[in-house]
Length: 325
Ligand code: 3HC
Image 1 (cartoon, helix red, strand yellow):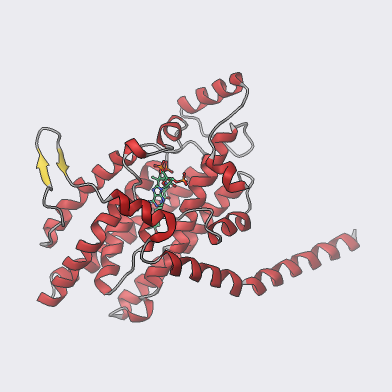
Image 2: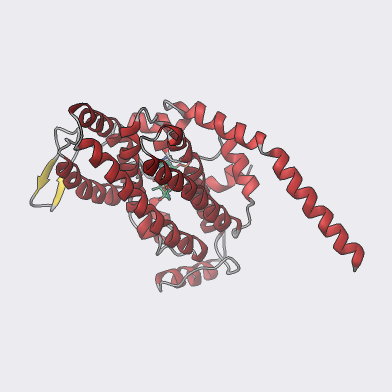
């Protein structure tokens, strides 16, 4: 039922309150959890922050898969730290969502039974070590492009969580670029692996920014409320402009025959991803959707005894305190 609620941005709030709220947003004020807010604003935030939190947690799976197979001790320590950071990001974001009146358990259950989404990118596999470099470079690179502006988002707890997350994401992007550079400058076989990783992950990375603006359902309202600071296409273009010279520096070729610097626009022209593939993936039909959800469900079920134990301890402590009063 909650999933239905958070899909709807229709709001029947008092027009005067709505106008005063919009004036606060327009003036650049932060909205805090106890402030009055339109239902649509609250629901949109729960949907976006929840989806973001789930992405951080599910995003640990494709990379965690390579911790035991990292090529050196140093790469292993870096990857381990990165995957742990992603868990931390998930926690900050679940906490931010909780300030809006939804518990972490509630939104986790919505992820586990498929009512809530997570980023499309994590439904693609990481087939070899070059993919781990490419994920850091491209996926974390796309994530930062989206998340740096979110540090200025209107909801206080979300904006503060993003400040911490962005600091760590920039290290993630750099370590990825360093790992793929090592491959690109390595043996011909290693360079080929780096190129192959770029070929497979380029378009899924472009999809991370969401559908094109004409198909984005939420952008207009979310930007009015400063829940989003840019449109999907604006950020995608910024990502292309930033990443193409990085690929050139590596001696790798972006898999897009139409990619061309457009002097007049001051941007690269590029080919959009295959949007039918994107919608297919977010509807649950990507290469790894079934596995990812099965892994998360298993982790949730396997952790039940920990949650039960912690709750039993908390209940016992509360009962003892109650008896002592
Ligand atoms: N993957 C999955 N679903 C997506 C998506 C994507 N890449 N892009 C859009 N969608 C979904 C939307 O959730 C929406 O579906 P819904 O109505 O059922 O919720 C639908 O497609 C229409 O898209 P809109 O453009 O209207 O949706 P939004 O306004 O929410 O914009 C967004 C999408 C740009 C992803 C926005 O939600 C956003 O900025 N979110 C915060 C950032 C985030 O979630 N990042 C996850 C990236 S991964 C990550 O951070 C992990 C790191 O370790 C790499």
